[in-house]
Image 1 (cartoon, rainbow, N blue to C red):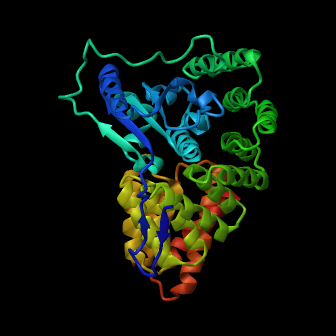
Image 2: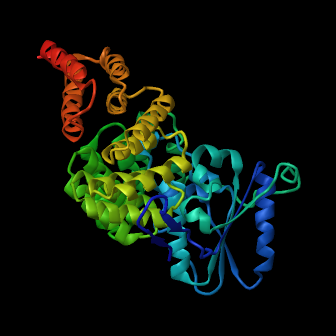
Length: 447
């Protein structure tokens, strides 16, 4: 199992990446026929095993993934990228079409069997578009034998074959797979509902519920997911999707219950812990949220978002050194993450390191195409704290000048409150009165 360790002090956040190798081989390249042939060649060394072909495009819409016979078994799947190809937007994307979820589920199934191996092939371009975590070796893919063919060796070979058809065109799973490639959500939903005519299976219900979320029919999504959970109570995907609906309904308690249920059923799936941590944070259960984010980080040490979230909850717990270290790690992993710099700036500000905080906020603004006005006001207060009162006032005026009335009033009121906290910490702060007077006048105009 992966482990995570922390030491007190700056820049000491360390995570031990998972080292145990899974019985999964994935060959990736530019030409489907060539990579399939290369992957299939690996089967030759497994003469002792029964070969079971599997249609990868159907994986997201099948539960359980496979019924495997006893004894040595090799699951052979070409065109694995087809499992991840979907037209759904990222914020509602069905969890079973996501790379880390599917391969974590496969890893669990292989471990339960004990004598099974998965050998597969995939197109590089499709993975880059739909499942970049595969090529980045993120999460479960850090533990998989991934062979990437270079462009010189990966050329089309007219004699090679893909190895198998993607799926049977008439099967329910195949129809759902096709539905999720439809560009229009309404068309996708009609296709999913039609596929249910073949049977109200747990997988079909979860898929349909996901599309119901896309079109904001949350009542239908909840109904379908409850039916799916009744059919497959131990399936993590149904619990995870139910948690997403509870989030949309702003019921954080039930969302947390659903995400926790998902982690209990598939504890190696990092996003389950990430969503649980975020939900617990909303419920102000900060210590529990930190524990969940640490579980995510142990599973996916390369997650900038995990480090960022750990920084936030560590700050809320008053552990500012650990918060700073986590934000710096997030920035190192994702240098263009504007909110990584903003969050670092906030932590440095609370430490009284105003010059460093101003620098972090300025870097965040430079990387933020929207130049977040709230964060710009924080930069202004950092400049005030470093003695640049004129620059602070100019920044405040620029950041708030074009905001609509209610939003502007809220931003300026929050800035005024932070200003008073700063003055209470630094009563000899030069130039604060002019900033205070301007804020007071603007707030009166907006009253």
